[in-house]
Amino acid sequence: MNDLEYKLPKNGDQLFKSDEDWWHDACIGLIEQEWDAYAIGYKMAGDLLVKHMEYIEKNFLVFPIVFLYRHYIELRLKEIIKNGYLLNINNDNQIHYTKEHSIDKLWNETKKIIKEALQEQAKRYVAPLDKLIKEFSKVDPGSYCFRYPVDTKGVPLKFDISHINLRNLSEVIEGMANLLDEVSIGISENLGMGE
Image (cartoon, rainbow, N blue to C red):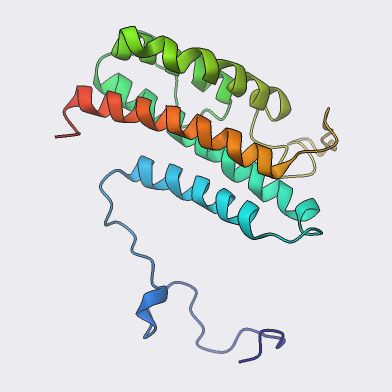
């Protein structure tokens, strides 16, 4: 089939099914750590878009790329908070992490968990992540700026920045991901999940 062929839905089309070209089938539900799978998936999608886009596409793909990376950070923070609660860290001050989209609020809760669960190693994670998460939160505090052109009241969203170097963004996110992944693994080991 020609890639440029104009397609329309046909009678009997299904969106979600397995097919005879099984090598294109994605397996859902086989991975035990669902928070981990979701987080990794969003980051990988952002990485792939940055790696394979053409020059002019950057001005359109910047929105899903930044959203994918932001969502990775949000999911990883939520996973760490969930596992921190399983370790009985900060249970008295539990935020509703599954409903919260402010990475600033999620990060503040995550820092407490890192400091208590990883003690001596906490400085390795908190200082570099603190600066970068605050920067991200300043640009997109509630996870709307790169998903919609307007806020929940229909007011156009404005950016304090005019350019984003997507290669640089991808590289910095990679460093953040390495630290967040180490924290996630460290807390999972404290829970006995890494055995």
